[in-house]
Length: 113
Length: 116
Image (cartoon, rainbow over all chains, first blue to last red; front, top):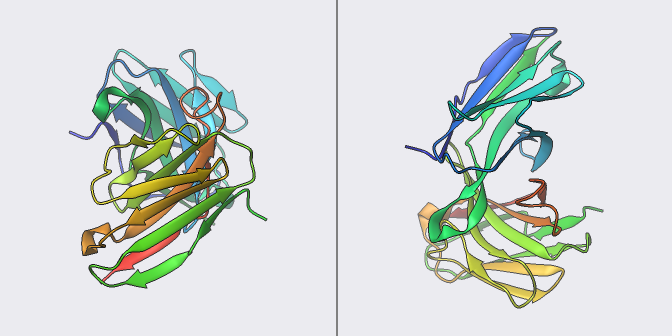
């Protein structure tokens, strides 16, 4: 089982739609959580952190469910410019007992006109 | 100019050749990382360095070595390249508060390596 799992998609949604991505993680000792965005053929960039109480940044809402070990990202009123791959990232103890950022393989979103 | 610069951006090489990927940064960060990205597998950590005298293995260090020549420079070497090292390689940096704490890594634009 992968340490961080995401539905790879692709998710194809019309402009203005609401879309949600989930991500599950296997290590219950994971401490912090993040969403990154990666445009096609570009480098990943931090989109937002995920706080225990949930947090919102404009049209983006991130939530954490520690009991079920998943995080989610909700995008409201999708724009064409939201088309990208969204990477779930978890701060957890990895091989060698060092705490590291572990990346999911990403969920691809295409917003259609 | 990019804050994190990788060279070369694209490289095609043959099995058994030695390859070096270079990374330099102008962000003044102490921490530097090398990741590889493969379709369906996400980003995986190869090596990381928290300062000039510090080198640590990541999840998939076999077949790779690194050198931290200065605070701003971190190079990745493949001593004898093999086809399954074909991937997109990213260098990243973070400050002391970043990385594990805030989760913010600053990535270079990537180096696409193809090993034939």
